[in-house]
Length: 435
Image 1: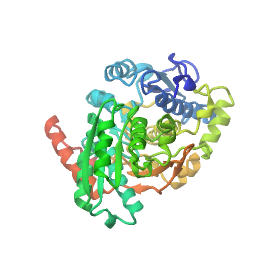
Image 2: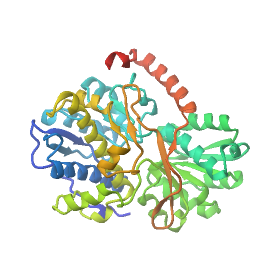
Image 3: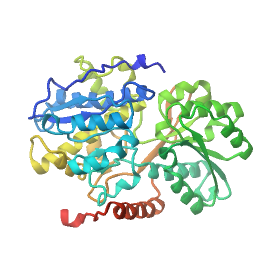
Image 4: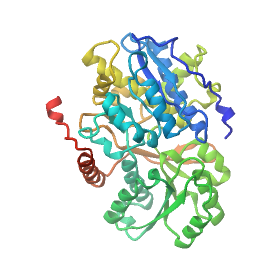
């Protein structure tokens, strides 16, 4: 999809004029150029639109205006670190960062801990950061890669008629040849052992445009399902390759970063029937999206030049990111007062988010994403995934919210955390002592 369809200004911008120390500053480390520009422009466009919406609708949070400044990362680690250093102390200090990049997040985690600035890793990053005792400033809000991997297998079990039907089946894990792609291998191995299915891992070298030999291998293997862990150009390449070898797209289940309009439309007819996970549903049926269009775009303050991209998967994910950021600020204000807050105070707010059914209704986001309740020990706050299927034009839900299989994820998190604290020479926080 051409970048021009999501044209957006690359200049540094602020909400409601220049950022003042008396305002709450939110850095925006976006990527609107480069290979992932289309998705990045929509995501950060949705997030900025929500910040604008809160300012226009409520005058900010507790009377404190929200301000922001963009910094272009191009989805590159070095550029992301530069943006972090440039923005972390501006305008009274950064509230939190959301890089929407696992690589950049890894590159700045130690810095953020030292600077006491929270990192939002909504649907990406380290899954073991769910344990806030070890990862005080990192928040894999809503759900993580490991939670989603268990949900994929549960969804396949549903399609087969029950989890017991998995025994003896064959599943191929086709994954991006990177640390990101390999991250869920231990979880899938554990699920295979638990449910008795055969699992074969097949790597696709990055960036993923060449997959002919891998799909010939899949054709020989004749698996019952393919779980796809893709990103960027790998997704449409996989779908087109599946079509060439005659593999049913209805038996391909991807993760959320392979499940956007950009992924499906780029594959054309080959995408029809393809299934992907989601932690935030698409569509303009949600009252918050309709009100953003009315309030923000009605005032000529919309971030995207074409409001037709409102309601798309990545746009709605961006809105959800904005909602979680604002709800963390609201929670922190209840403890520290309606004033400009430090990053460490907002970290406390992120540990005390409570978006239950009542709050979702008030926000106009009922069922747009699962209910979220965080704590000192639980920085994920949910762990649910929903699946959707491409019908050739739109994504359609094909499951309810599926909870992570914690019997698999928690032991893996525990082992990973133990290794992490030993390597770093740190002591786990006592959450009871901090209440």
